[in-house]
Length: 464
Image (cartoon, rainbow, N blue to C red; front, side, top):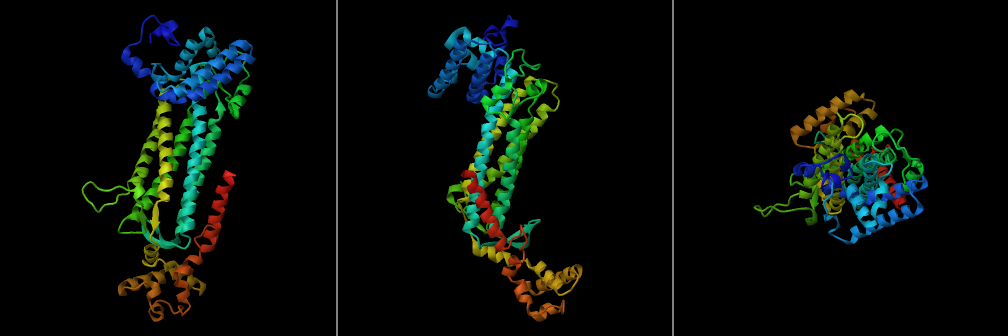
């Protein structure tokens, strides 16, 4: 395509260098904005008609032409094979080919700067909503896993050292809460995306009396941009999105890490299904957690896109700069990566088996009821710091004789405190250790059952 064939060709007498032209072109990736740009162009056409720039016949001719282009792209697999600088010039060239010079009137009052920003926001708005839906499916898989193993117990960890026993369902609901926050962030990102820049033109605004609010309503935007310079030079919404996506991926990576650790022979709390595992090309016995490792690894990819956009924008003067063409691939790949990761995460959660006996046994070893013994002494009137020191010495004594606290005799325990009597047995039981955590947010069976019902209720209300 020569300089005079391009949207901006009138100023030029020569052709662009072939290597530069290829370097400059974005059609290979921004064609994903095709449907969004068609939609925005129809709304802009209506705006021009109501502003008196287009006659009714011209407006109908343009809209019919855009509809035809959209339909042809849907059934002709080779439709996008024609070379073009970007998807926006592609659509305009197809429109002019189809309806003649009337098609050239569509770009009146707009620039590719506000055109691109509008199509990008439309496309991302839809995809953020879809990612939130996929995240909800991960939440549902967590709730189903929790409900299927209501009574299962595992050791809770701090510093990756056994700390206190918790219910498996409590563990599942911890990740449910993380993803709930992720979805809240997506809702906020969606609201920030949903502001229309169309009508800002190149940077100074448009001279035509297009009713921007009417166009925004047609496109489903909540409002219009207040400053034309900011509107065309802004990619905060893309950075907001990749930032929210990064936090979500961090949460999914933590989930993956937990499950990788729990699936090892050393832990043995879960068994990964064949649907989410691979084998070794050399060692026949291996069952590798590749699905989980990919989830963990792809988080880094999304983090990189977020940092890339921040770096891209940090030194740009107002308003639009060609650097901003680099925003699309980062956002597109983030959407693809997060979408795939959410789908696989839900599949993983539906293809793991819980070794309840092994995890329960682990929850009863390692002096995980030490805090309960301290609380028992506090109930007897012993100051907590004194009780803490006493139990520490009791743990050391148990290690020396190879017994857990609940395995030690009353006489052995009374060597450390005469306040200990027969009722300590109940206090040190696994059931009491769990049941005592009965405040809101705790791991007692009663509280976890309430939290599980609330989580399922929230999900069910969303789909009604």
